[in-house]
Structure formats: structure tokens, C-alpha cells
Length: 116
Length: 109
Image (cartoon, chains in turn blue, brown):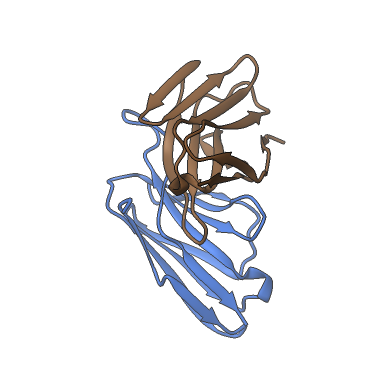
């Protein structure tokens, strides 16, 4: 266990559904990330939150909506997804800025999403 | 565009031999480098971090960094079947990790 948890681990949803992915980190880190991993493609960074503020949005479609209520929790709200959005969604956390900065990112187990 | 390049493999190594994985990166300003191991269907697991030129050893793993040549490598000594996985090289650019596509390693018993 890395100290980063994600729920659910598997999710099947239709294109008209709305669902949310949850991530929680127990490492005391101040930055959290959402990544998408599709087959045979490198990890794609979707969103970055530093100190609860969104600092990066890598041209992600608006059908993906992140939320970071505090430095330990991160959500990804999903609505009207497309079949090509089926992938492994990974959450990660790290400590950035100031003393203790390592940039080492620790990943949760991921949510395997299938859009039908 | 800042890139991280890896040979996708597959790389096959006999059990007990040394596995050598290589990675090159495009930005000379990068200061932090990482190796992740990812088993099929699982999330990436951080196995090595390296920040200075030279070698860093941790058990059977050795990371090597050469900033002048812009490459970082990972050596796995006494390879075991449990080392069979995809190994991802990652480099920090502008405080964000950029990953390579990974090298698939298979250890042959």
C-alpha cells in the first residue's frame, strides 16, 4: 500500500450516466494529480492541484470535472462520457515546494473505467 | 516538446542475469529522475529516485544518471521472474512528471 486509496476500483457506466471517482492520500502531501492511462499510450496528466488550487488542466474535455476540497481528498466527476474515455484512471500525490520537496509521486491503485 | 524516450521492448533476460533498461530525455534543465515498475493491470510503483550524476544503489536495483548525455538507466541484478513488468522512466519538467512509454521486461526462468 502506498498511502493513496481510490474508489471504486472498477466502474462501468453508460454514456448518459454521472459518476464520481474518489481519491484520498494519507501521506501528508500537498499536491494531488489525476492521470489517464490508455492501452499502449504513456501516462497522460489530466489535472494538478497544489495546496488545493488547480494549477494544471491539460486540455481535458469538460465532461471531466475535478474537485479538491482539501489537500487529502480529490474527486473526478464524470458525465456524458464517450467509449474512448475507457481507461485506467490514476490518482497520485507528492510533496512539492519548500522543505521536503522530492517530487516523488505515489500512485493509488487506480479505477478501471469502462464506458458502454 | 519535452520528451522521455524508452525502448518499448519487450526485453527478455534469463533469470539470474542483469537486466539493463535505458531512458533518454530532451531537457538539459531536468533535475529529478524516477523509475517506476508497473505490473499488468496495476498502478505504477516508485522503485528508484535519482537526482545527482553517478550511480545510486538500492538492493538489486542500481540507477545511473548522466546529465551530460541526458540519459538515465536502471540495472536489475540477479533478475527474478517477479521482476517481469513494465518499467517507466519519468523526468520532472516544470514541477510535473513526464513519463516515457515504458519498457516491458520479461525474465525467463
